[in-house]
Length: 283
Image (cartoon, rainbow, N blue to C red; front, side, top):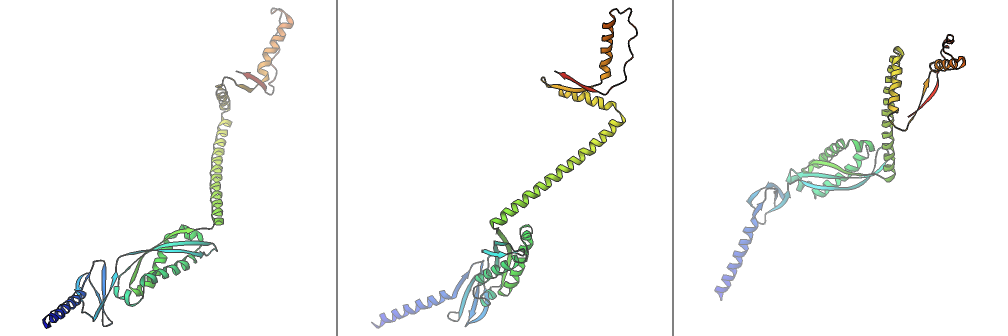
């Protein structure tokens, strides 16, 4: 009987000793560190790999050293030019000093998130809407610098801060659309005016050439008639000098009045040139 009790006590003792030994053996992966406290005092980080703790006297807190990605919830902000918008961001940070992350702050993830939200509202409120939309990289750099300075005492390094989305009110979206449309119309009118100016310069040069060489006007006139006559059913109206036709009509009238060509006196001289009239040619 006494032997059975002894064996039972020995088994219990061995079991407790095994549990103590197992609790003293710690394995920490590469992406974690174990912050060790001995009787409540900080000893320092250990790991990665296998190490031993003094049972009962030492305690370990695991800290993840990988980069943590966190979405900053949308914040309603009034910009410098009094436009109410909603803006959200994404935050990338990591623990570079595990001891400070455990000792200096209770929950470094939640604390970093709160700092990011307040800094986002403050930074966006100090710029106007155009700067926020056109120079977002500068705002991202500014946010990263401010948040990193505040989390540095906690052993937390903020690597990247990116503004993801800017939500504008409907009235502002309509105003921006009208502004963009007006800007496009402005560019179109400027281009059209520049084309008209270049065309007028070319026409002025052509007028100078025609003034020096009047025959070029007749050539251009004939070319225009040729181009118009390409169509089969077309009516062409062009000016014709009266003196060109009057010579033939006077000769015909004179011949009809005298009857015989032998007794015909000299035909009258051609009249002085008259202003051109309008002839009509149909094709």
